[in-house]
Image 1 (tube, rainbow, N blue to C red):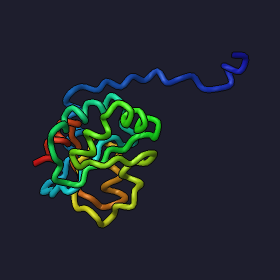
Image 2: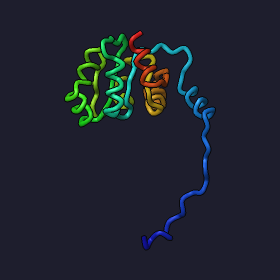
Image 3: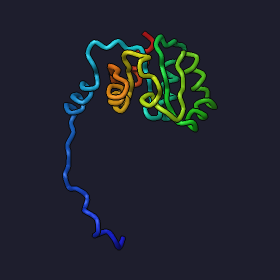
Image 4: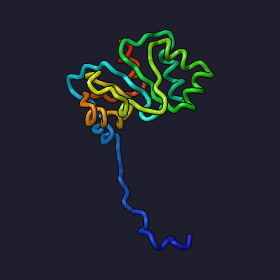
Length: 146
């Protein structure tokens, strides 16, 4: 473009991240002595592929903790049409469309949250003063059904 030279050139710095760096970052998102009473998947929004995976993991099971799946309204519509929503809701989980747990009015309702999102961990601590634990979708389901 004609104006290309008006702006600074992109940085040539390269940052290398290895598994050790990821392990350290993950450890920082797990609080000690946490009592998990809320589980959430999809902050900000679960994809239809994540919802399909969740439906498969929850099929025939029951959650024993408050469990939210946050997603976009069009994605929820697809999940409804293909039957994923029914499986997930039959397990006792709830959907929240066009929002995520970090902006929902849940402060004071729970003590500890387990989520699949670093964003939710950060804001769960900072905004809502929750103890937090990050985990995979599988780990979150395991926690919710025990």
